[in-house]
Length: 328
Image (cartoon, rainbow, N blue to C red; front, side):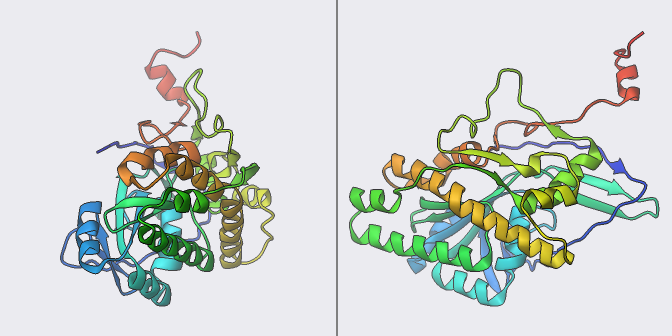
């Protein structure tokens, strides 16, 4: 189990604006379990497999940065929680067809902004979420990295659920697996519109940026199936981030919806084929714990073993002075 804490300084601004989408989370008696949209979510794979053994349902296993039962988690998980998991109709469909479970892969980095009038805003930066579709025994057969609009997310899950049934009925046929995971090559694209609109301004305000160690190469950049720019890693204003995806000026709610649509298009066109390519080469279902680090590193470009997640903060003049590094 990985356990990292990334400390990011508090940033004070003279003025700013923020739009929040808050998630109200109901907690049942068991710690880590929660109710979203009237439906029960279980924390951890072992508990999910025990429930799946009783019901025979496949498992929808959400991995995320931060915790699903807390207000601040990674932005893509928060978006799924708010737009899909909390919706009673969507939640019922999910619960009817899956055992719902979640797991935090590590804490989510946050930036806190203090306003002159005493208000504070806390924003998640970095991290991501991945929805694993698993057989009742917990082995993954498909993955939906990132965020999608509700109709697409549910449709992709239904396709994966049907495949799980067909694969099981065919006694784990290699040809059934290969046919389902046949993928077209991915191309070049900008991704993470929704995260970018939220995280890029936070990076810009805080002075944080991303940097690979000297000589290191991004796992995703070196993957021949993918050549994508994660916009959320670039410090910029929300307006500039929206322009990257052609999001038209409108109300905050409508621009939020446009960002989700942009993420959905790019994930279907580029990210999902890369998932199919990776799983197709594996040849069959795998334990989530044996594939999640590769999904994050090779497809989402997030190294779970990097304590800083590539985030760097230039030192202030006072810090350089304290370290004796100011030029004479």
